[in-house]
Structures are given as structure tokens and as C-alpha cells.
Image 1 (cartoon, protein in one colour):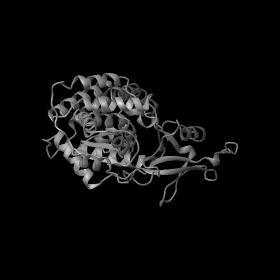
Image 2 (spheres, helix red, strand yellow; image 1 turned 90 degrees about the vertical axis):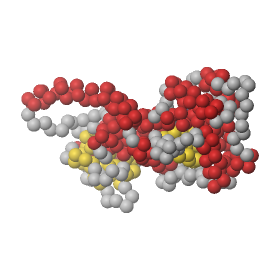
Image 3 (cartoon, protein in one colour; image 1 turned 30 degrees about the horizontal axis):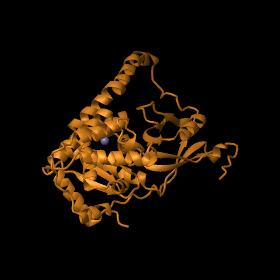
Image 4 (tube, helix red, strand yellow; image 1 turned 120 degrees about the vertical axis):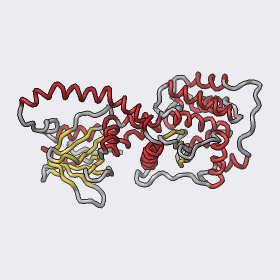
Length: 378
Ligand SMILES: [Zn+2]
């Protein structure tokens, strides 16, 4: 296929962004065009009147976090925001919006001088010290209902983000016998769940060989993982590993930390940008971008949970080993699942955690396991 660029004419620009009108908390997907006649950026949304931002009035907010996104605002509108996530869209703004980096007018230079140094210090303190501190501590302070709400919001974003059309959420797999088998697995592994912190398990109809945990005890398996596990014990080991992340508050911490100042301040101040920021945490969560220590701790938690349930921790090793053999150098769909440098150590640890003389009880009947693996239907 050949792409014909008409001399990089600016009117050929077709960009995308997320638009927050400042009145509602809901970010809207927008198509972006340059309207040369109006000398404005046209922000086009389905079923909404177009919004025009004069090019000379677009400003870029100072970087708020390490995200690859840029947040634009309008000089005279304190609330509306446009979030650009691609380098191309940001480059177009840099070229076309001439006043992008102009600071808002300040009355009285004197005051600026007085406030300048201390304000700069305060911002640095906030970005480098307070935000990570707040994120980590908020994770511990969030009530169960808050974590669940955060998790559900991220889960809905995940479902939309993974759907090929980008419009409908990815379907959940809900074969009733499969769900019953999952329930049985959860009860066997974690028999004493309080009502408040009960685990919620979903299967998503996606070929990715992956599982991940979200804030509030939401565990998600992808269909691809069910297809790659050969025994109920292997799946149970992954289940327990994900619960290990939940108990350590890893997903809550990363959700809050990844959203950076926008997310944390959003939660504290009810800032509408918080909702959009959650969207960008999504990728980090399904990539399970945890530290090596967090992974090792979740594995150790899983080993103990398996032993407590009369199941062999070694199942985790069996699964990892087979995936490694099948995929060799990690890439593509299993990249995040296998890319961990210490996979060999994790296999060894799971084996070492399995006593040679222990006896184990079967987890699921053959028919239950078949139903679970076929939970997404034909
Ligand atoms: Zn993990």
C-alpha cells in the first residue's frame, strides 16, 4: 500500500485526541483537523457540535508526569483540556500552535519574582516527592469501595481498549458451567473471603496469553491463557499469583502512581483530569509492569496459597516452563508474561516450594475443567 502525502499540507492533518470539556468528567474521543479558514484546531466528536480552538490560543500544560502524553488547554478557558497521546499529534501542535509555550499573563513582575523560586520548589517537591509518596500511601488508605471503583473503571477502559473496533467493550466469557468451575477454584484457594474484599474474577474473550489484577480484587484471565494452561492447577497458580498482587496492593499503587500528579490530585481534588489519567494507567496494568520484588512476592504468596489448598505450587513452574519452551524468545502476545528476566528463578522457586513427600487433592473434575476452558464458547 502506498501512502501519498500531499506535500505535508497542514489541512491534510488527521489527528486524534481525548477531549474533556471541563463540565463533565467523561473524556471523549475526538478527531482533530486544522481548519485553515478559522485558523483553528477543529475538535470533532460524534453527536456533538464541533469545538474550535484558535491556534494562537492553544497552550501546553507543563509536563505532569513521565507519560508520553501532552495536555493542551485554551488560554481563556480554565477547564477544557485536550490530551494528545501520539508524537505526531504533539508535533503538529508544536508547528501550528505558535503560542503553545507562552505562559499565562502575570500581573506584576515583582510578584512573579517573589513567588518564582518558591513556586518552582513546590512544584518539584510535588512531582518528585509528594506524588509517589501520595500514590503509595493512598493505595493503603483507599477504602475497599474506592479500590473497587478504581478497578472497575480501569477494567471498562481495558475492555474498550482491547476491542478491535475500539468502540464496543471486549466481551466477557460467561459460560455458566465455566463460571461455576471458576467459583469452585476461587473457593478452594481462598475459602475465607470477607464480603467487603471478595475477589471478582472475569474472563475476557481475547487471544492474549495473559492474566492481570486490578485494584479492588478484580482478577482478569484472557481466553489465550485458558487455552495454554493444561491443568486446573496451572490456572489456579496464576490465580493465586494475581491475588498476591492484589493483597500487596500492587495494582492500586501502580494505577495511582502511573496516573501521576493528574491522577492523584484528581482523586484528592475531584479534578476531571483524573478520569482521563486512569485511561493511561490501563496499559501499565495489563502489562503487569511490576518490579522484580513484587513478582517474587506474588509468587511466594501463590506458593503458600497453593499449599494451604492442598495444591502443588510446582504447577506454576510447569506452566512457565511450557510457555518458555513454546515461545522461546518472548515477543508479541506473551511478551509481558514472559519477559521477566528471572523466569528461571521463578520456575526454580515454585519447584522448591513443593515438598517431595506432600500429597495433593485434585481441584476440578474433568468435565468442570473442560467447561472452564470452553467458557468463551465456540
Ligand atoms: Zn505478576
